[in-house]
Length: 148
Image (cartoon, rainbow, N blue to C red):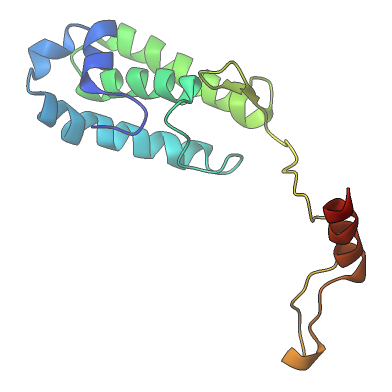
């Protein structure tokens, strides 16, 4: 079973995949596996991959890429679908389009990852282990938090 989509997802959208192969395991290992890895490779410059299993955009693209890989379509349809996939990936990489997860949350290129200790000096660094210590500001903030 794929990380982003299943053979059932692909069959529901493109039922003529059945004519290529009706064996779910074969579709998973022969098409979905490679389509999802190609998707990860193409988006890894701007996103952390693999994506979560609830990423609707990744699922949608994986289904289309699986169908494209199945190769049971005419040249015109193949070119149209390939162009549509390429445009969506380009838009995602350029930040012209956001990804969306099943909760409706957007995943945007350039989002800052937030950390509750990002403003403190690192505990570890270069030098002797004896010189490593927790930032006094962090210790103070934790003490204040415990007292409240």
